[in-house]
Length: 198
Image (cartoon, rainbow, N blue to C red; front, side, top):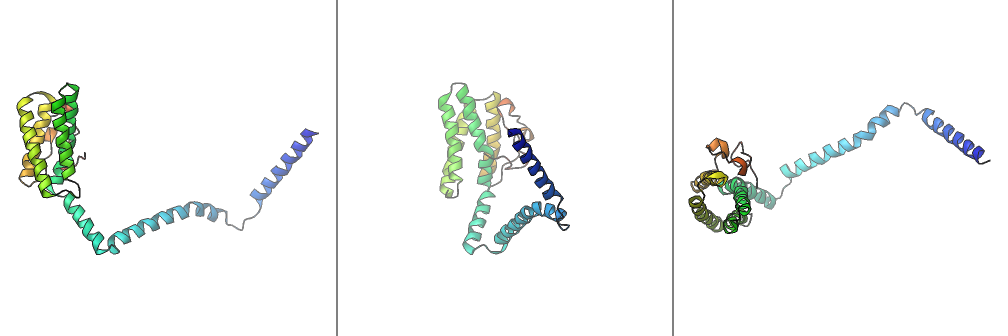
């Protein structure tokens, strides 16, 4: 008896499904299938257009001023310097830590943090100058101590970037392009100044 009930239910379900699939839809099958994907695309395009319009036309003067200030900060030689050298300082810190030279590792990491902190939106020119002075002091100290190996190569590249930022220029391409392959202790060489990010 149970088999008959299951069989009857299966037949009814099959017939209902066949009717649903075979009933004429008034030629709207293709249209409805296309329409399934269309709203998402249209919605996305509309959102993108709305965002562009907002950015281009509807920004308040205060927001435009803030965006201009942010762009000016990011294009400054100091900001580009930080983008290139901060992670190199961290890399030196890591190399020194693995060699058991914790004091030097701490100095390198402190320079990286000071450079980044002074480069933030609320960073002042005085803070940036102080960070650069600290970088120069630690750089000179470590270059006197590390004259060979990966650390020396990274320090030589940092020195090139430091000289550029002091001259008010963006950092030069570092690594191989500057004649100092940073080797196993190095980082990817940016193809353009400021291409690397910390």
